[in-house]
Image: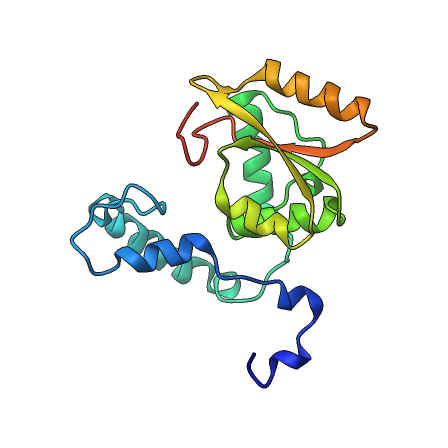
Length: 189
């Protein structure tokens, strides 16, 4: 234990290095083609287009682009997302206050954990599931129950069996964490 760790909170003392980060370190610099980690080939990035967009945004909206903005997201972005959801999937968002902009999946998972999970709460997850979700949820000390997958995703009959079992034991799950499209790590949709 380092000399400053005596000042850490109990929560900070439970923090562990990300398994994903450690896995990525193990292949760095080697002649390895990684099928994990969410790293598309750099040749696929639309670098020229992004540079043009960034230049245009800085030239045309410099008063906003480099300033602090609302933490819940730019109203223009939330409005555009609301319109997109309606147009693409016919999802009606009652209020833009129901849209939360995050910096990525990790921030979203952390917010979910903070809002919904108390120590000892039951969270049901797919087996296997996204490792980073487990890492985010672990800080809230839930109890996990897993449901296996098949080629179509979560096995609904197994989920129903688990829910019946938990109900008979007086256990109410807090929520089901599932990735129904491009499930991580299997890719099942």
